[in-house]
Amino acid sequence: MKGKLYGIGVGPGDPELLTLKAKRILEAADVVAVPVKEEGEKSTALEIIRPVVSLEHKELLEVVFRMAKDKEERKRCREAAGKQLTDVLDQGKNVAMITLGDVAVYSTYMYVNQYAAERGYETEIIPGIPSFCSGAAAAGLPLMEGNESLVIVPSVKAGKALEDAIAGFDNVVVMKAGNSIGKIGELLDKYGRYRECATVLSCVGMKDEYIGPLDSDREYSYFTTVMIKREKR
Amino acid sequence: MKGKLYGIGVGPGDPELLTLKAKRILEAADVVAVPVKEEGEKSTALEIIRPVVSLEHKELLEVVFRMAKDKEERKRCREAAGKQLTDVLDQGKNVAMITLGDVAVYSTYMYVNQYAAERGYETEIIPGIPSFCSGAAAAGLPLMEGNESLVIVPSVKAGKALEDAIAGFDNVVVMKAGNSIGKIGELLDKYGRYRECATVLSCVGMKDEYIGPLDSDREYSYFTTVMIKREKR
Image (tube, rainbow over all chains, first blue to last red; front, top):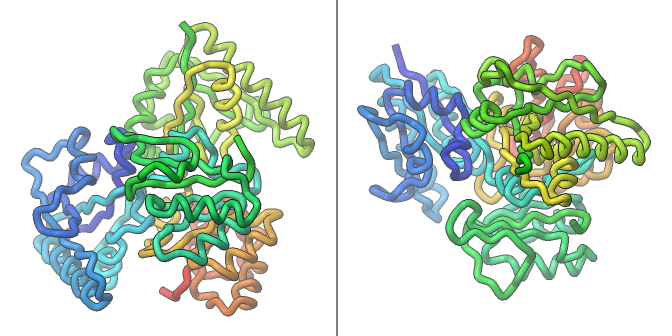
């Protein structure tokens, strides 16, 4: 009997935002797989589950996904990760791989899910709370109402998509926006949208939390999201 | 001492997709508020929490949000709901209002949250798993990878946003798409996108579940979502 592979979204940071299903499957799994960018790196996803999941006597398996610039090297690295995980499944062990936020939102788990599924292994994905939902909750703002649409766009290297979104859509969430606050302000001006319709969410739930208006004079961390609404609140 | 108002996202349908926090707050609340469109209507959100939240000796409060066509009537109805809830808060009771999916995604809770917050009551929003995340998990597909963007658009009355999304963005999720399968197929053809890049998710987790390609000859329910990717899978 081969083991089963689970991809588990652990949510955006608050351990209590784990789902009941994520907790149950993690506690029942033989192995918890922890994705890292470098060997020995601290894992935020692992820190999130520690207070709420019993990990005693649990085998932890580090899986390296290097953020290499070279596409072929990234691909090789993902295949090595897939092989590492299916080798454990071949021993009959169930493996649950944790991932920040939701599994379908910018997660590397999807590559190993495909690798394992294509080779006939059973896989299951457990969704998690994405950071834009917890950010909206913290700001007390809806992502969308009525018949509105929403665009989620990363600011990095996404010039055209970011501009099209601000030009034409009701609600826009800009992720990884720390270095683009000035640019976002300029695009709002260019398309006649009020700067007061934008809310910056930085380090939500952490010690440097900032939830407030666009302020080009502040410095923002990488974990900064900007929510843009059609109307002023 | 006035009570506190909570808005709780209960997720898309599977009771185990409730978060640990939602369960804790619902079990501690004095009153669980249940939004309905008509008095006495069955609540899906209430059915979702029953198997996992202990509701014994818990006061259930029905709150009516009529889907009136008239904007002023909808507004009056929301204000009445806000008044109904703050009256309970005035008795010193904590109230947790449940809502399907995530609280920031097309939820009426946001109106009463604003009503209560503006009047000085303490409020807190607990995010839930939105249906597009659980749909992507069920289909085994990422919503976005790398530097991709995502547009979420309701098909109803959203002709231009739907067309702009299909014309210009990597990933598109069309919600409430049951009556628009034919239209979506035409738009894919018009903008040179492959029909094979679209996956229909209908009644996920229910008895009439369908996860598969666009098929204009099938009938689809209101709870149908279409995921469109840039590339064929």
